[in-house]
Each structure stands twice: as C-alpha cells, then as structure tokens.
Image (cartoon, rainbow, N blue to C red):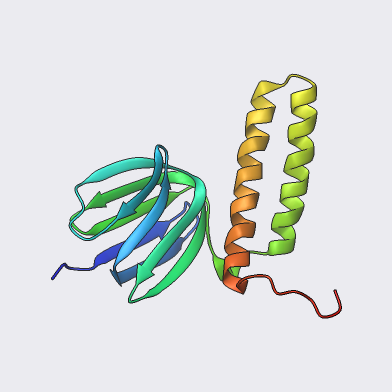
Length: 148
C-alpha cells in the first residue's frame, strides 16, 4: 500500500495547511492541472492562480491560491503560494468587489492600450474569480429561492 502524502501550503505570512494522510493533491500548474499521488516523481513547477484540491479518505477540501511554486519530493508536497486561503476564510463579498474592480481596471487598460496594466488586471480578475469559486464550492450548489 502507498504511503499517504504529507502536504504543506505556506505563504510569506503564514502556514495555511500542514496535513499528513493525504491521498491526492490537484493543483493549477503552469502547463495545466497537475495531480499528485503517493510515489509521484520529484517535481518542481510554477502555479497559476487557481484552486488546489486536497483529497483524503473520500472527502475533498478546496483552497484558492494566487500563484507560486509546487515541489514534490519523497511523498511530500510543498506549496509556496503567493496567496492562499481555505474556503472558510474567503470573504465572498470582498472577492466579488475585487472582481468588479479588476474588470473595470482591465476595461480601462485595454481601451487605453496599457498592456502591462491590462495583464495585471487579468491576474487580479483570475484571483478574485478563484476565491469566489472556492467560496461557492464550500456553500454547495446554489438553490432556487422560494417565490423566485
């Protein structure tokens, strides 16, 4: 039987997750989504803003990351993230406000031909959308409101 993974997710400010007994990690790698299982070959890759999923014993936890690096070595997964939040830490209203501001900034930058500002706004937009996605996943599927 495979030895479960040990996973550590850290930012410059704090340790967001440190767990053993993880069955699989799914992360947004720079070249696409990467799945890490026990006995994975050593790996170092950059991460894009996206959702990291931690799977263990039939359950799954989703977290948002704002980019960074992922390293796999000897059944250990280390994520050095620019930003990272557990689903229960995401303030959805704040994330939606950030998405609105990023869209406005992107529109202004594209219309005025400011490529660098447009790219920064695209990254900010992606980060906000990922945070919203993680918060919604935690709440579960949207349910129709009565009388609506």
